[in-house]
Length: 329
Image (tube, rainbow, N blue to C red; front, side):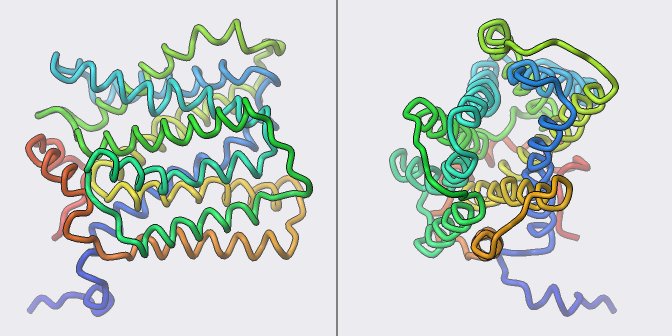
């Protein structure tokens, strides 16, 4: 006689074991992205942000293309290109501009506001409604990140702040469209992710001679750093992230993004000897609670309804049977 485990019985209906697996896998992506600051500052040549972006995106895309070869069908090429620009090609440059021109705390706070951007986008385009309690958890996470990343006096730069806002809106829009569009019929999700990374890297490439002015020096440390960014922070992280973006409610997925600045804070404390004040520790706990609690909010009847209905017609054999898709047993 088969008996379902006791702990599974206690889970809410909307948090089935497969959903927990998808959420945990998607959460790994921002955790891996949280290592970017350490890798960039300790291993990579200085003042070459666009080079790092391209070498993070293009090799990762080529690697995934080897695993899942193919070319998007004609009806999906424009959509794939749009997602590549939103998620990679526009987001990466804006991220680096904000990082260079704003205090890290402000950039992190704006980035962590992506769940609230998702709520606004969904309301504007009628793509479903987010329950107020989830908006509350998202706002709580933003406050927590603000406390964790804050450090002394705040100096705002208009260009940096604009870049941070554009970057947050770009990624949030990309996640919303990823959920709404899904993947082409009979196409591996990894193939779609590969082309997004390639498109994004190609879009960024012309910015290298314009933005980068640091020395081009490749040593063993740089090779290790670029390899980590491409394979772990690129191919693996984006595969898990887009997988979660297609299967989970968009507000929940973007709420996981706050794990990136929190991971960076922990790494800075453990590996770089950066001290965390009592306020920062409290903020860390608040942000973590907001991010986790938001995953257990029951979906309303209209939440992600447009994306779910639209995406269901595009469900392919890869989405049903792939090793990268969890199923209830």
